[in-house]
Length: 272
Image 1: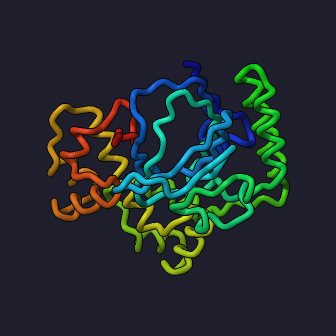
Image 2: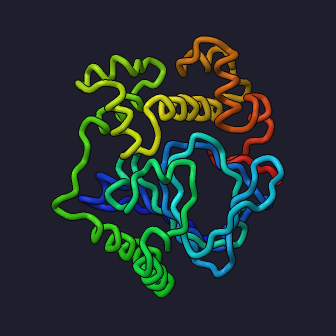
């Protein structure tokens, strides 16, 4: 298996967290549940076989994806192929920074998987052909950088209020007070919600839930026997029932079920 990661240089590093490429991926699993991680991604498939999105409970196919697709910020899990034998190049955007590259508001992409051809038309097909023709991962990454740079121009505007809110929530989700955060920014909560949905894809409250959840997922990786009440309190949950309810909504599992089923790959849980 080949796996390589790349962090682009300026100016793309302001928008993009990383690219990664893998070929002949190896896993014994067939289907995995991918948990909400706060990211927006573009996935470029470098095989001819179709991929699918599955119903979280029945695991029946509910969507077919070919060539490439975009996955918006999610507030619930999604069941996808585990990817054995697959080859893909993935673009992972920083939170709140994907919108300059998309022809639609990020709210329309939230909790959705959209075919890349629908978003970028023939331009995406040409991009994929060039990536397939490139022999080395470094060349593939350069081609993707060119594609993204063409979508940036001098008129690209970042929203400093949204950026401030995203960083504030990420810095300490356990102590984030959204009303106080809105006051610091100088806008009403209603206006902040509107800006946040357009740039990030969801509301500040929903994003905060995802980031608190991710803090717990990260902490679980560091201990064999989690102290659930302590973890919940540290993440900002002040009662156990609230914590368990949010955890199940975001993952589809209770905390103990997740602990039994989780894999070595963060945020991926084998279900078949």
